[in-house]
Amino acid sequence: MSGSVSPLAPKTFAEMPSVRGVRMATAAAGIKYKNRTDVLMMVFDKPAAAAGVFTRSKCPSAPVDFCRQNLAGGIARAVVVNSGNANAFTGKKGREATELTAKSAAKAVGCAESEVFLASTGVIGEPLDATKFAGVLDDLAVAGKEDFWFEAAKAIMTTDTYPKVATRMAEIGGVKVTINGIAKGAGMIAPDMATMLSFVVTDADIAPAALQALLSAGVGPTFNSVTVDSDTSTSDTLMLFATGAAAADGQPAISDAADARLDAFRVALNDLLRDLALQVVRDGEGARKMVEVTVEGAENDAAAKRIALSIANSPLVKTAVAGEDANWGRVVMAVGKSGEMAERDRLAIWFGDVRVAVEGERDPTYSEAAATAVMKAEDITIRVDIGLGSGRATVYTCDLTKEYVEINGDYRS
Image (cartoon, rainbow, N blue to C red; front, side, top):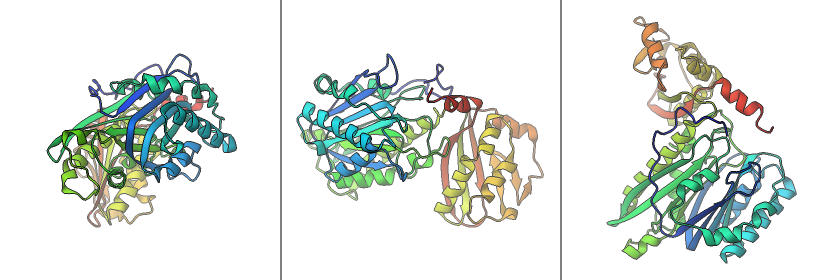
């Protein structure tokens, strides 16, 4: 973790309320970092409904394989997360580490190993010594507190410069429910059906299948629309749990994601996912600026998203932003290489409210001073109109600075 907090960090953190039905505790097991918490345990005293989305990487970590297998059961009693080691590309040793951890967690909580979910983040390719924290799980299972969200977010950080937390309220059938979430991530961020690591818990009473449908739909415009460096992690895990505690207040049980009584909850959940995803981008390694890229007028929405990601992932676009240079030629380049339909002579490009190019050439009223003024802000919007159809998408990224190279040049040392 670098010494200084990202200049794009939130000025204040959300006051995180308790969510009934989940307790959390953290420990410093010394997996990689000294003198900081690196293990988080979440305990559900009654079975909670579980949903998850995971990396589409073809080289997933051992914990991702483990979670996918257990998700079929749809029930969670414990979650164990460690930072400092990803337990990825660790072969047989990796599977043995997940088995030992799951066994220890199941024993500590008094549940089946199939009701345990695991996540690891950190260096890839280093064997994880699970004995280091298998020993602390008994204590954590007992020590867990409901009011521990901020500490939980701190325990899963790697190169993050601040903990990421978010909370929302909603009503289901006239009964108030709470949704809390934490996330970690600062580099190796180009999620594909998930985020780096993120855990969201609600006290709503929602069945696993409905919960899964909500989550799978919710990641598209949120976590799957952010990129720091175009690199999809081996460990991406986003899980959503529903403890069902609100049933005691008379909340009607929901078993179908299409149930109209879920409308307000869906809006609140998607808003929370977007909040966490943007906090991740704003903590991009070495980031000094946040960039919102909107592409419209594409052949369809999927094409618009691919073009937007081509712009957002371009090192040349990102370094231009870092240098406060309104170099729209690099945006043209990124549109052209995306592989999607585009016609040069129909393109229009804006930096902020300043149109810099139109009909395939520089805007006749172009002002370098006006464009440069836009680039000096912390938050920058780039908008491109392809001029072909009605496809539209927005993605979020950050600039690419010397600090990013420094952080990643000596990550293992």
